[in-house]
Length: 326
Image (cartoon, rainbow, N blue to C red; front, side, top):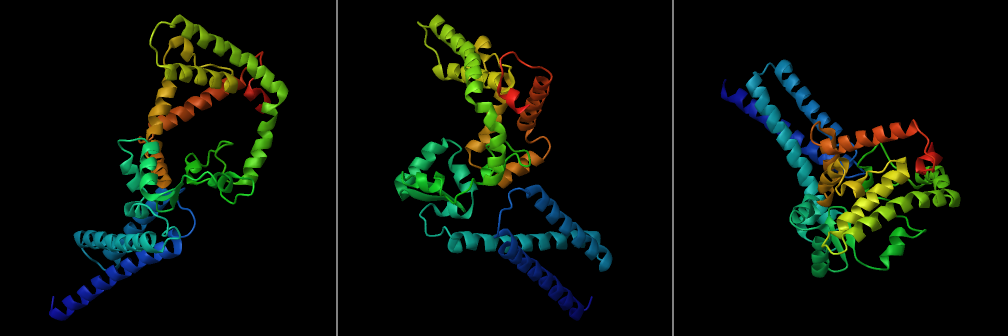
């Protein structure tokens, strides 16, 4: 290879890297900076790997390069793209974001993982209290997140005239959604009308009969341990979930009798830990989409499905919530 050919190749490589860098900036500025993208993390990952694969095919068969050379070049092109993307993202979040004037740790501006790291050894309540003591009643705790500790903010955020909507946390299980997790008010209102008959005066009186059974079991258990030290939180937990299971699907978890958590509740509690860290929703959905990384969630979902199918095959004497819905 003569000197001229070498310079041409070097110029071509540099131009490709520059284009990749600009593509990263462009992708952030015109796409990722706008709207919400937390619903499709696996799709974006597949898209980027697919683009890298196609670029490799073009370099291999379009230019006749050796396989090792293609692999190295494709890797560097991908890195250049990511450097451009994240350079633009960091500059935007740090200095041009609409929340830039709110106080808070600089690391929290750049990534939601900053807050997650702070909560590894402490509950969110303590972590947020410490930040409010340092920065005041309104603190920027993430690139697009504020923690607000102002009484007058309650009506502004939750009042009937509020323009605020639920955040991305409620999209964790999308497209499967409960009444509680709908973020669009009109859709929520339609679902709410379906549920309204389950909470009529007549229905509530029936639920009281169901609750009375578990309340009596709780009193009996506490009276039998009147002279012992007990963890009252555990017993209230047993009672609460027994009531919920019975009211929803006419089938208690029998935790008051066994004096321990039902196995599915253990799976639920274990699965909740990532939520305690306030991890970004795109990351949680990516974990759920990768087989084997969210076993507790899928185990819980399958259990709920089986319980519902079982309930649909029988009709209890005392109506439960499912009586109205079915």
